[in-house]
Length: 372
Image 1: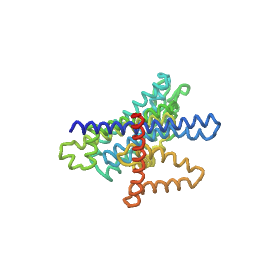
Image 2: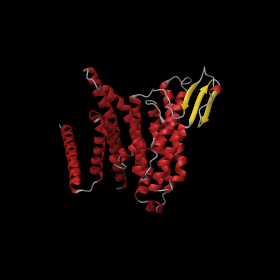
Image 3: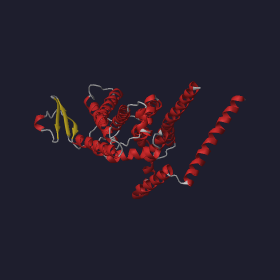
Image 4: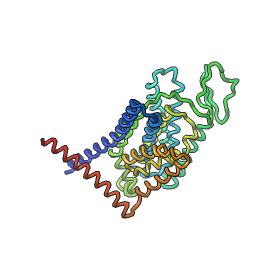
């Protein structure tokens, strides 16, 4: 009996993993097909849609990684942009420094992803050890402060490379007289934007987004994932059965930071890296994607991220009113997602019932075809 239950659980986990990873891959395949058809028939507007594909992939990684901390572990973190910033800057600096020594762009980017991801994970480990003993609002405030501190620290660094090596300064620009002007390369210039080699591709972003879904499903369905959910559901009960709460909190926090750093490296390689982009507004926007998609629900997070990222662009014809419409849609989604009103519950059941009937009909048709 236990073996059968375990097999059913594994079957369901595999099914969810395939559906969610297929959802991401299918989105990219369908959009690329639409873009190809638009180009073939001479229809304009494809450039704008293509321009959203890489940011959507990066934000999928951001939101899915945050869902591990907020949704699966149950701890509110408002400093996710800090880990993204660490990944973007460490990976970006690595790419700039090795542009001549590693001329193969994809190889340099692959190593930068590892460097940026591990740097963010290390930061998650160092910050997680002291703060994860806090809970609720206190943890949210400390993580918010962490994100802002990282951004301010990055704004204060000046790094220039020349024939003599690296020149690093904190808080004030480097004296020009100490730099060889003929060979200088500005890497970091305080609050100014950093120019990273732009060699990320839509294919790479899509592959990493799918891999993120698969790996996070593995984590959630593992023994560690069940421990995360036990801590979320009842901290005292989890401690009473011997679960090391601090250890599992730290594991979830580090994994979340790792993927945030990887997404940050990707972000840096298709976008201008500016410290102002990694403020608390970015953390809040990612949190909105997670909450509206459903805490602990990877599929909901995927759908919410794609929909909500594209929504402002759909409202662009309304000019200055587009963010007003965006806010209204967010409020409506929040009500539909979290309301206990009878008509909302009835609406949800109607939609679920329609999908169940549709799935049942498809399964019956497939069974009949096999029988024939």
